[in-house]
Amino acid sequence: MKNFFILILLSSSVFTFSQTFDKQIEKMTNANEKQVIEWRHWFHENAELSNREFKTADRITSILREIGYEPQTGVAKTGVVAVLKGGKPGPVVALRADIDGLPVKERVDIPWASKQLGEYNGEEVPVMHACGHDTHLSILLGVAKMLWEIKDQVPGTVKFIFQPAEEGAPPGEEGGAELMIKEGVLKNPDVDAIFGLHIDTFVPVGILQCRPEGIYAASNSFRIDIKGRQTHGSAPWFGTDPIVTAAQIINNLQTVVSRNAELTKAPAVVTVGAIHGGNRSNIIPEDLYMLGTIRTLDPDMREMVFRRVREVVTKTAESNNAEANITIDKGSPVTYNDPKLYDQMLPSLMRIAGEGKYEVMRPITGAEDFSYFQKEIPGLYFQIGGSPLGKDPKSIADHHTPDFYVDDAGMMLGMKAMMGLTLDYLVNN
Image 1 (cartoon, rainbow, N blue to C red):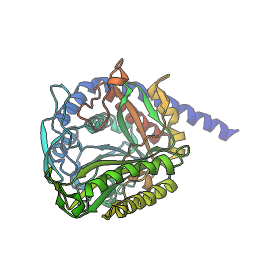
Image 2 (cartoon, rainbow, N blue to C red):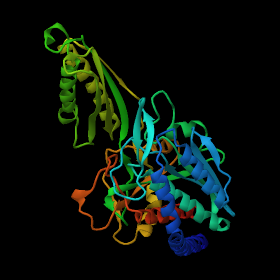
Image 3 (cartoon, rainbow, N blue to C red):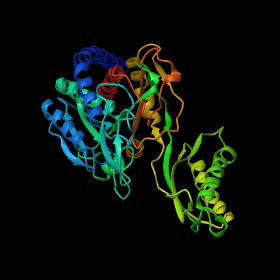
Image 4 (spheres, one colour):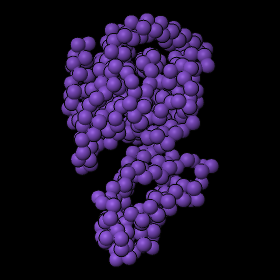
């Protein structure tokens, strides 16, 4: 009976503690909203590509130092890490935000649109935050600022991870979450759990989404090199056409999912996103290459897709008297929310979102290298809405496109969620 009353007392104190923090979080979020939006606009206007986030890292470092942190720079090339030691003992929580942009030319009519240029695959390209990473890192800076203001009340340690190259390091380079882990970002102090978020342009502002287990797909990039025999375009019978071969391969690859994958078990995607070959209308080229991506949510299906893609590529090329080689990178694993951590934090997610604002989402075939952190320690990844309220869903542009746009207002729930999850985890553990 004595232990029962102690348990009731502890549960009551935790509840009161969380409710007190909720009020503080609401007040601090409102007070910091303008600043976080200003940060977001600057990062958006100054977008940089993966492993080239030099200005971005400098600005993050400068802001953290102004707050009072002593950040570590140059982690995984351009990453920034800061640590807050709370005024009370407790566990260690990591919060992660990605910081890189994409080789996309912005078409959104906003005063802070990106006009930046970068180099990708040896070519000069426009650069845009076409996936919301500018909001992610601004949210995390806001959380770092708010936690610093109440650090004496924080029961534990918080590690802030500003990660480069989530979209993938340039060819021949290491980068992203995998390199950060390799360099010890989850050590010294050892991290007990990690939280991360993604803003979604199709989800209305104010909605918070999550699910246990697989939330985002495993991602694997591939390259197909096709070798034919060059000839004049007027006499194709003297050569071997790699372009016709490529066209047949692209069509045949669609059967891997539609005819080989058990889609009632889990979704899968095989996409060819680039094809490069030839330089004149009247020359059949010697060779060409194609780039693509494979997305899977089931490990067995992943291996089946790999096998069938290789068979389709090589056999189709053989049928055209051409040669084809395919390489599939090791990619990133499924973004997997630890079920025990999810169960523990579900009441927090629902409380933070508010009545009717929390949704259990379906898994999606987008990918996230946050999955590497989750392979090492329990991790929870969730989504917040970025679509302006009342916007026609048919008019919304997808991620990684020139018209991608998310509303500043979506970041406020992101800050509340990161703050609430962090403090609830530290208090309850």
